[in-house]
Amino acid sequence: MSTKAEDTQKNILDTARKHFLKDGLTGASLRNIVKDAGLTTGAFYKYYPTKEALFDALTDPYMEHIYQIYDQIVEEFEKLSASDQTRNMSDTSSAGMEQMVDYIYDHYDNFRLLLKCGDSGKFELFIHNMVEREMKSSLNYMEKMKENGVKIPIVEESLMHMIYTGFFSSVFQIIEHDIDRETAKKNVHQLKEFNTGGWERLWNIEFPV
Image (cartoon, rainbow, N blue to C red):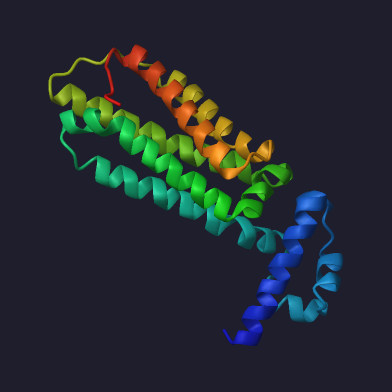
């Protein structure tokens, strides 16, 4: 893509972001977005076939990057022995959440779109995908403990789903309430510590801090 085309695409995305944040996905007018971007409709369609595709371009890559951060952390974590996983659980979780919060704040308005544009269904999808990842990771951890002779009380998957949905939804309150980055990091860390304490009770296990 030429520099001129890249500049045009950036202009479209910047203009669309403002309209979506103001009016939501359904309320935003593609005609007004195109007009404010200084383009003809024909020129716009060379970049994005629909308003929905334009919205996807402003959200999907950022959601995907959070998934990648999570997946990379879990991949390294699951290489550890059972005892090392327990020993490193708290530190690994803290480092991962801080990395995610930093990325969210580096692309703050794109993540605001997930909350602002509830009519897109993107936020629910994002939370669902994070919960599914956390469920899989937790079940793998429980199985590894079992294989190594560590007895962990059974926790119903339905309860696990409730806990993780609440956790990841709560994390995004940092955007809902427009909290500054450093306070957000502190809040998310304390939320994680609160969550860890609950799992220690449920699993009857202690994660060293």
